[in-house]
Image 1 (cartoon, rainbow, N blue to C red):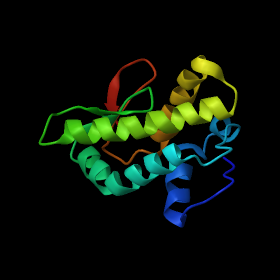
Image 2 (cartoon, rainbow, N blue to C red):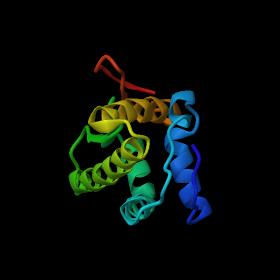
Image 3 (tube, helix red, strand yellow):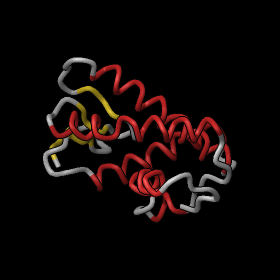
Image 4 (cartoon, rainbow, N blue to C red):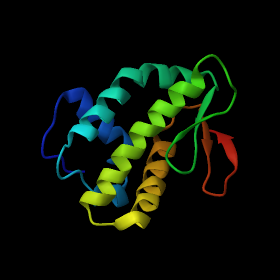
Amino acid sequence: MKIKKIVSPFLFLILMFTCASSASAAQYDIKEMTPAVQNAISGRQGRYSDIQSLKSSGVLGENNRGYVEVRNPSGNAGMTAEAENRDRKTIYQTIAEQNNLGRAGVETIETIFAEVIRGKAQSGDSVQLPSGEWTKK
């Protein structure tokens, strides 16, 4: 994934974590780092350790559409998942728009990111397969 502007090394790692290892994902890029994308990335940075902790404890899983999903409700996991998914959606929509993929392109981006995230999940994390079945990595 090509990035015209990099705000920080951690930002680069977050973006690369979610999409760079897939050949399909590599063909799409963020052409302009908009304020909305910067805010979304900042939000993801701020909750990264919480998301990882919730995933490793089995509270959150990665679904087959590229979003986190509450698997075992606990505390404010629902609010954390909503914020994470809102930021991911902003990034996905921006990639689709900036690569002229249209409305249907968001679904393509979601599918690609889901595949990459599944592949990068930690051992024991809950992931949803393309078939809809949930499993532990």
